[in-house]
Image (tube, rainbow, N blue to C red; front, side, top):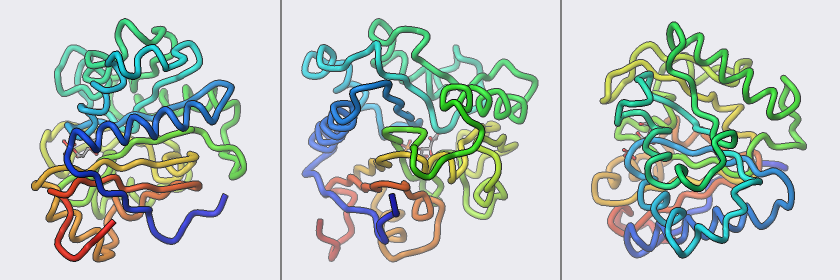
Length: 247
Ligand code: 6PG
């Protein structure tokens, strides 16, 4: 699969419509794969409406829970009991009571520090994938969800941080975040995130307009550099879309 030159831009009328469109895309990737499915979730507030959709009556019974494995693209290095923990948010909104516990793959935060956590999670991903080298013909994930922060970061890949240029490791520790919350992070790297059939960004609401303007103008920020080996989609709502950029 060769990556397309530009991400595909899809515009939803508002944040609710965007979440429903995202849920349909999740279901489409699930339907396309009759075997074991791997979905990489994301943190922050952007995916919350999508997670609610997936846990709602509209989708819950359509998801083949036994076949779907849930990973996370980055984690704040805080305890699982902390509401800042990204996987805890996903668990509370839709995974608990639906996904078999063995199919939920959190980034561990009980290790000595973020580097040890990154090593442990890389091992877990490699054991799931069945190899320590990514095969360009065989994606690690069916779907990777992403968001973009105000500085153009995505996952916990911040502008000008060395993690952004990592090419060997699948997961790395980040000692200090560039934006709040200022806790250490653990993040998948661009090559690991790229190994997917579809990478789906969600950007909604007026606060995203400034960063979306910079990204659409082609600034070489992490959120622009993050591309799938398959399809990359930017799902945005009208409130986030700068004037002059149509769908
Ligand atoms: C995190 C993230 C991060 C997030 C963006 C957007 O842990 O914070 O995974 O990359 O997706 O910062 O965050 P919001 O959705 O809160 O705007």
